Image (cartoon, rainbow, N blue to C red; front, side, top):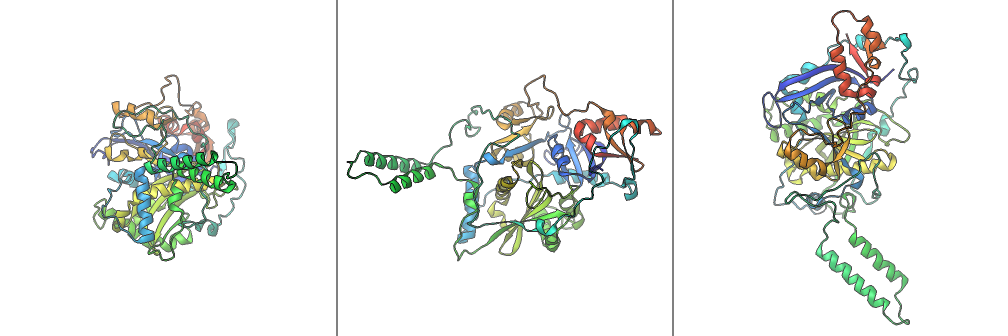
Length: 521
């Protein structure tokens, strides 16, 4: 039996946009996911979908007021910028010395997709009201040669080892090895073009180097030259030569995130930061034990940062959108030790939670869902810091799971200036809304300057390779029986719903439509 079961809710037009404040400009399609495999969701976000709790939605790009382009960072090739390093150094100084920056950095805005989903209570209205008995599969209809898509339907799922999942923690320590950087699989060929004046660094050229590093290199070269010209009676010792070469190599190598995060701290460090990854769905014992404390941080964040009234950030809202998830927990031999699925990445400072990153760990990526933090620690730029830690986490998971090498940052909204900060995490790609091909962001930005909606794939003959070609093969759950749409169509009584099924299948693609069960009453 397929693990994914969804109810398609259709299009929602003319509701409030959280980015441009248009009261009637938002257009999106949505579905309620009762369950979903991590591979299903990976394939869906690679077609422009995104989730809030169990509600999965996709902006209708050529109609919505603020087109939202899926953005991913190539984590293995990522190098922190100067501003990123400042944030990492600020955290390190605070932990090791207790230094507090006098200048409070402007916090990067967080995604407002939760606000979008809640607008007009659309997500609440879209919640499933179908009884559990109607969703229970009793049989598989194999008439007209319809084959079961899941050959392992009879196998009993192994119980997830919760204890193994709970303690996948990251701590600031000295015994962490820096991941080896390499070319990620499934990445688009990166072609960089020189930027326009004022548009940022030219990524086709080597990164700028500090003057002191250049002076140090020249000094080493001069010393090496002098030693080579010396008499045969006083040659440069092998260990001295090796030391010089290593020093030269180290001086030329740019610092990685890990160089700032996984460092030795003095014994008398005034603060201790620990990052714990706990499974949120199904909730682990650690998640349950810290639920109330985590909720209180979320409530303060919503009230102070997003100006919510005291009665709005309810436990019910918190649970629905940041704790509930349709993703099935999965553990694979070549997967991460903590498994695949939905997690909360908790930032513990001196024994208390100061921030929580909501993430999904999928076959090819770590997908960022949301971040909330204690407003008292805004001076630490936790929005930037958490994103950098999640990139480092992706690189750490890659060591065990080679296919997992991307960091998905949600949506990039070029028409909203405050949401353009995501383009600073490079190299990164945007998803073409018509062909679903990844395109380097450097090629996309000039197009977005001219039009808020763009087809990034410049091959005009290219089409969506995952488009629906056989509607009859769409999987349907009808009257507790799994069948193909071709069989369901003949048995259905009443008005035809082919237009709705066609719309659903065109948005999720042929592969997912044949793998996921679409509930029909």
